[in-house]
Image (tube, one colour):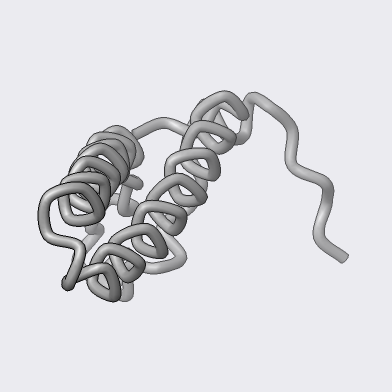
Length: 93
């Protein structure tokens, strides 16, 4: 039975279960790039929101594409919030 993870487990870094090379030649465990993912989600959120507003205002015939950008902005917002949660939990990256 697996034990419950504590805050210091996240601070130390979780084992590289996504990295198949961790068992070969003494490769170090993979680390998550949470900060990069946070920046990319933030950029996607700002860009998609601004582009959607611009399309709604400046090019109304492309309203369908603006709605696609709104959906992508919502997905970027959800990713941004999830990554913030993981960073506050103490995961390195």
